[in-house]
Length: 302
Image (cartoon, rainbow, N blue to C red):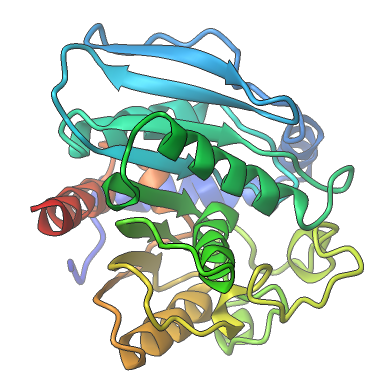
């Protein structure tokens, strides 16, 4: 990937740093993060249509490309450290997944979050969403599980759980800056503490005392997939920024999965911050990341 950041990337990275260092904005953001925006009005491009599906304990948005003949579906698990509900910017990501998936249906899950719903609530909702997709007629090999941050970890936790129940796994995983180690034991939590624009210079409870863990063992692979056995996992794309405190989470999983014989595409984006892909087409690096997602999906689909 690029050695030097583009001018626009430097500006966006500086804005991200400023936002996360400004207590007023972070307090405001944190106060609103638990409020779901799944049903908030959103204007998709005209070739896309969406509907809300009520699952009882949670809701999902199903995004379809009109007149698409695609046989593929992306199970989209959002980030937010297991405490943040679905936000509007994840609708933009769902649209991008549909585009790079060349007309794939995208099912975005507004799973239950802590502290009201600790582990295993989010995992149970992800499993139920996966089963719903299969009940609609998709074959498990047509399902790609995609997630960022906690959602990336949840995608792997879902597969660990399915495997432990002797169930067959989905066709692939896309993990953007996945949080796979809730014990915070990786070296990058210290090495990148001073340079991470999102989590750096702050021992926030979101990372160090996350309420989703509750009374569970944080080394449980259904909470921290990095501690699991990846034998038999589907192909995985893992993307991460080199400036992330969570860098080790990706490195450990990529190494373990490769050692277990899993097909892994692992890419580090120089100078990038946590879930930089959310910038969509605004930065060269995020455009490259989404192009890589498209290539990966094409590789495992055909």
